[in-house]
Length: 243
Image 1 (cartoon, rainbow, N blue to C red):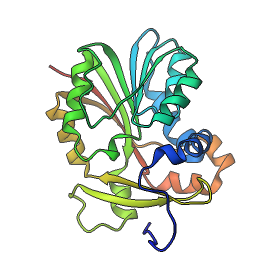
Image 2: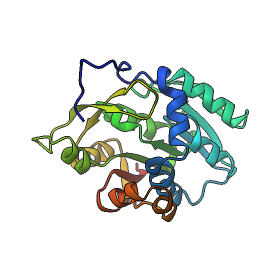
Image 3: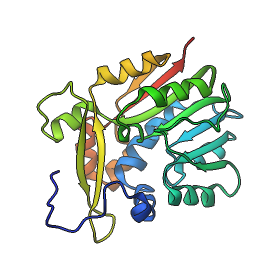
Image 4: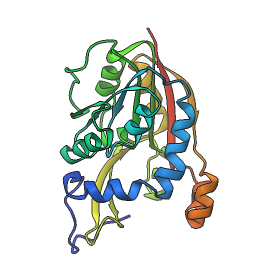
C-alpha cells in the first residue's frame, strides 16, 4: 500500500505510540488469532518444562500460552510498552526484558534454551545472519527455532516489486489502530535468502508450514477467510540447531 505523504501518520514503527491498539486488535483478529497463532501452536507439541525464549513477544500472547503449558519462559521485545504489557499479562510467571534483536543478546547464556519462538518479527530486521547466530548460540544441542514471517511471494505480489530475488525495504500503512494510520517498514526477501541465512547459522530446517485459516476464521471473518485460503500471507519455519 502506498503512503500519502500529505496525510498525518504515526512515525515509522513507533510501537510506543500504537502498542496498546496493536495488542488489543491482534488479540482476536483474523490474521493473528485465527491464522498465524493456531498454525504456530500446532507445531509446538512438546513444551512442558522446556525453557523457551519468546523473541519479539509484543503483548505477550505467545508467552502466556507457553507458561500456561508449563514452559519456563523468557520474553524480549524492543518496545518498552510491549514489555510492560507482557509483564502484566504473565503476572511474574516468566522473565521479560527489553532487548533489540539487532544487537547481541549478551545477557542470555550459551546453550540455555530448548526452544526459541519468534512470531512475525524477523522481517523487521535487514540482516538475519547475526540474530540467527545468537539464536544458535543460546540454544541447547538439538534445540529448536520456530518462527513466522511474511510470505516472500505474497509481499512480492502485493507490493508489485520488480525483482523477487532482491532483499528490500517495504513501506506500508496500517489502518484500524486509531484515528491516525500506522506506518511500518519491514524487509521482504526471497525464500532462498531465508534458507541460506538459516543454514549458514548452523540450523537444519525440519518443517515449512504455509498456514491455512481456521474454521473460526470462516465464521467470524468470512472475507478474510477467503483471502487467507487462497493466498499465502505468512510463512512458518521450524529449524533445529545443528553442529
